[in-house]
Image (cartoon, rainbow, N blue to C red; front, side, top):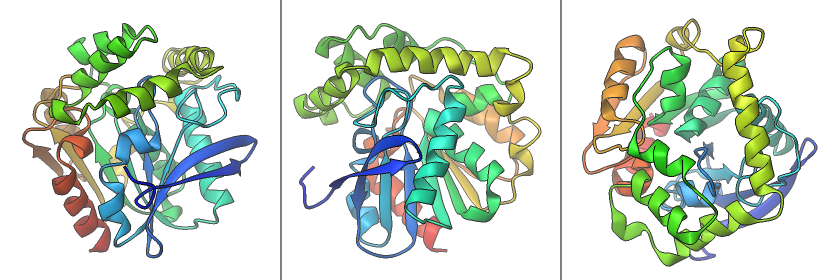
Length: 285
C-alpha cells in the first residue's frame, strides 16, 4: 500500500495515544474497526478497501486498544471488548465526528454494533462483516475451528503469523511477506503481548461475570436496532463458519445478510472490489 493511498496519523483519544490510517479528503466519514487477532490493525484489516472508499468518503481505520497496531499498548483493558467500544467513542469525540457510518470485521463488528446500540443518534449506517463475537453475544455457540486453533497457537513467530493469516483469508496470494511482517512486528512490539493477555482476560470476565455480562450480550438489543444495517459473510470462512452466519441471520430479521463466494473470514480482503462497492452503494443510498 503506497503512502499516497493511506496516510498514517496519531491522535490522543481520551488518555490513549492512538494510531489510525486515513484515506480520502472529503465526504461522509466512514470509520472501520479491525478484528481481534494478534497483529491486527486498521491498515492490515482494511488497507485493500480504503483507497476505493476514499474516492467517495473520508475513511478512518483506527488501531484499537488491547495491544493492536501502533496504538499505545499500556492502557489496561480490564473490560476487554467493552474498552474497545469506549476507545472508539473517545476517537470519534477527539476528531469531532458527530455522525458516521461504521463498519467492523469479526470482533470489530461487535465493537461497532455495541457503539451503535449505545449511541444510535451518532451512527448513520452500520456495515458488519463475519463475526463470531456477535454470534456468541446472541447466544449461538459455534464449534472450534481451524482459525481459532491458529489464533491460539500464535507464538510470536513469522511462521505462526503466516499460518494465522492462511486461516483468516481465502485468497492466499494476498499473504505477502510485507503483510506478515506488518502484523508480526505489531504483535511483538514492547507491551503488546502483555496487553493482549489483559485484554483477553477482560473479555472473558465480561462474558462470564453475571454482573458484567449485560455489557456483552446482544440477544435483547441487536434485534431491536433500527439503524440501516447490512451483514456480509464469506462462504469459505474457516474462522467463523458460514453456518454461524446463517443461524445469526434468523435472529436478526431487521438486518439483510449477503454471502460472498471465494471469501474467508476477512471478506473485505478476499473480495475488496465486491465489498467496497457494496459499502459505497449502501452508505450512499
